[in-house]
Length: 449
Image (tube, rainbow, N blue to C red):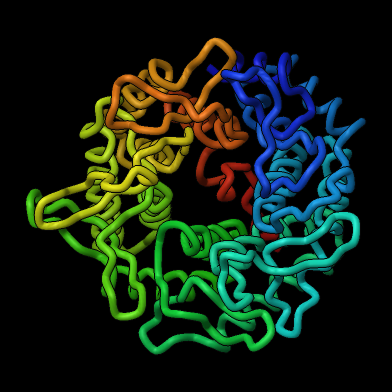
């Protein structure tokens, strides 16, 4: 699957960000600005290396060495996406290969992002221009707010980069973000999705473990793990946040008692869960295997398995056996997308990611079986003659493709599938932490911290 997707990208869109598999031409989402940034290449590097696709890896490495330069984009780029895909992908490639070229390239990318942090609070803007250095927030984040999942998911990469370069400028930026977040803790322990970079005050009370919130919580636990469990502030923040999430957001469906997390918009409860939110299955599993208290470990694992089952239900209740972008719970409907803009699948990894972690932690064969079924259905419905494409309606077996082969298909979806069926000695969870784009960073030993 990976080789087929790579070969088509190589043939029809080499150096561009992504491939349009039906059109057999290049594609670039607005998050990448403009220009040939090679997002697919950078996102795929560590996956190609882990899979032993050495020839393909070398093609990618050579492109990065000779052509990777974000300043070819005169349009704004997403700070968050550039960090997790480019800085993350390059650092993971270094971690696996020891090739120092990647450290220099990652430094170049990170330096382009630094002007976004020049705000009154140090909370970065969401967009930065690689050429001018000017930064601002997304237009859709009304009122000029920064987004929790974006400014809260920078520390794995920037701390690791500071560690490798012995330059604290990067780690200082994320340390400042943590200071601000700690200084404006909320009474109930929940974190709203918006914070203003000028005032340092929370925005409207929109709380979610899906889009806009998700990876903030992920990075609290993973930053603690990557520090060799030395940075206990992150663990304390994680424990408090998860306690609040379980207390205020956890619900069970009326029909079949399926566990799910709601979203809060002010006082209003939105009984909807994003495909993105299924990442929390893997997060809870990772928490459980690093928990010494037996009862707490068992309780955490139980919840992870309950949510994993809900995410599985979102897959098997469709015509394609692939889950929708988001699904709802009402008196009439359970774990189903209701609106057209919720019915698509864009090759996302989060459900498979959760099952990968549960396979590694529980050894229950059903998680491998679920991954196998998902892989077969992706192969059946998403593969086209020119690569893999998302589909617009998972509830119809007569699929309409969206004509985009996302870069995260390589970074995440294919990687997690491969690791589910690999020996546990390949990328063991005791030695590696995956960023939110599934790029692998080594866990620091006690002596390094």
